[in-house]
Length: 153
Image (cartoon, rainbow, N blue to C red; front, side):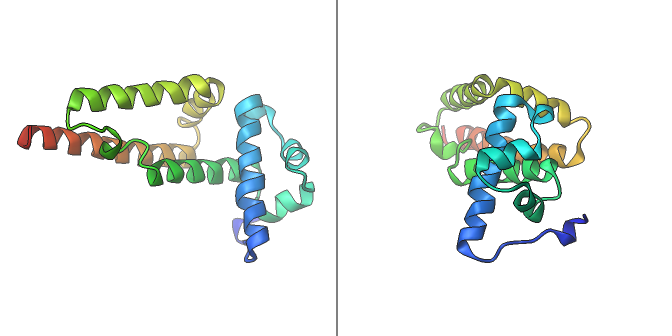
C-alpha cells in the first residue's frame, strides 16, 4: 500500500486513536520488546484495536516508529526539553551539566530502544533525518547559550 493510500483521520476520536493510542502503544512496545521484536499484531492487541485499523492508518510498523519519533521529538521541543530556557542559569557549565544529565537519563531509561535506534540511524534515512534535525536544534541551543555567555557573562 502506497503512503498516499493511508487514511488520515479527520474526526477528533479517530485522530486521538491514531496519535495517542496506536502511536504511543507502538512506541511503548518497541521500547519494551525492541523494534525488531514488535509486530503490528502486537501493537494492535496492546492498543485494543484491530490489525485492520493499524493498516488503515499506517503502512507498517516503520510508519508507527517514524510518527512516534516525530511526536516525541516535537513534544521535547514544545516542552523546551533541551532549551537554554530550562537551564535556569546563564552559566554554560550548569547548562552543559543539565543537558548531559537529561541525555543520560533518556538513555538509561530507554537503553534498549535507544541503542536500536542509534543502529537504525545508519541504515534508515528517515530515522537519521529525524535525529539529525533534533540534534541540530540542540546544537543551536548550545551555541546560543555559549554566545550569551561570551557577550553577557
